[in-house]
Amino acid sequence: MSDNNVFASLRGSGRVWAVAAIHGELQRLQSLHRRLADDMAAGDQIVYLGDYLGYGPAVRDTIDELLLFRRAFLARPGVEVDDIVYLRGAQEEMWQKLLQLQFAPAPQDVLKWMIEHGLEPTLACYGGSVEEGFANAREGVLALTRWTGQLRQNMRTHDGHTTLMSVLRHAAYTDDNGLLFVHAGIDPSRPLSAQMDAFWWGSTAFEMMEAPYGSYRLVVRGSDRRRGGVRVGAFSATLDAGCGFGGPLTAACFGPGGQLLHLLEA
Image: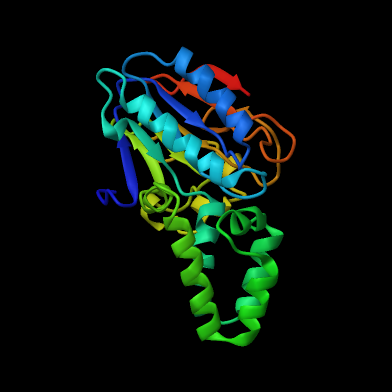
């Protein structure tokens, strides 16, 4: 777990705010950020639990809002760069795979699956379209390579977007191993280094946890594909209240011992 490109470490002695899946819901994110700005105290840290892209109507502006709040947060006295962490969600994982679509063995099938799972607004945000994607997939590898290259270039024209996508982590944990933050879940039978796609797509075993996962007192996730709402149990917590699907955007504040201190909705 020492690979800083994969996992992020947070101070176990302070409070940690965790923000659930956003799904391009700009107004909800802006409202939540205003509340966080008022409620965050000195020494607080913040983890965004992924799925900034997809589904919602304002993907590009949502990323811009994340970057604006980052600047404001880092300007606070005593705040360090490592006090704010962004996890990779399923939507960000799909976007990175789409940018490598020319290497897929069945690109039309892969593209169809991604569109069915909410990627179309992200594609439109960066100047692409579903029709173009399928047309280039039918044409072959060279056409797909040109198309995905243009999408990459379009993304670079938006300040900070490519950089943000390059620093997304698979998970974050407090340095006392008390809290573990993930996007969609974990497989409790596997070590953290072997979770693979469970980080992005979850595991049916996550909600059936009857004991702590390793040394972690609580595992917190930000996305639930089953849309079961916010739930906080003895060993796991789900913060997804359905943002992007008609529900609010949620942020929760956890104390050093893993206790839930505050729950905000916007």
